[in-house]
Image (tube, rainbow, N blue to C red; front, side):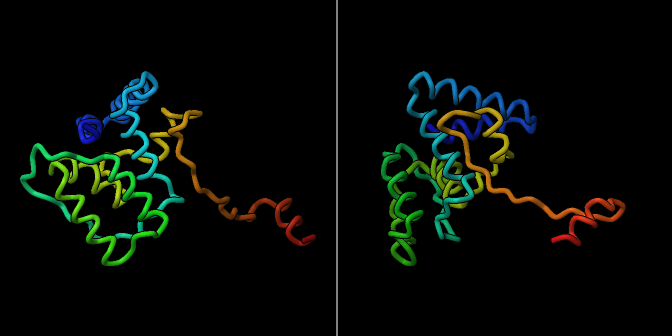
Length: 163
């Protein structure tokens, strides 16, 4: 169950603990564990700045246990939302229908976090990439160079004059 990985990550505030759990998931995924593989795929979706789902309110469920948990349909939903194949009321209705087919624990602690792009696990793309660097699970980083102040650095001020 994917929510178990997130629960393990949340078990401690320690950065090293969180990296250790992600490392265990990576090892399990590389050994063929589908659950760990899926969890790392979802971490990628959650923290990838280039993928958005266009939804603001994701319903939580209460008291649903022993549901079917159709993970492949959840993956299909994320694709449809990410490509904007589903938007507006259609997206809202599809999310609600799928939420009712998941255990409340799995839906509320994992799926809602992925769709809202915040797992509330105390990790970031940097945490995941520190462990998953140079693997299929590495998350692309969006960054830009910040401006620097040339005060007290005459060589920088002179180079700006020549531009």
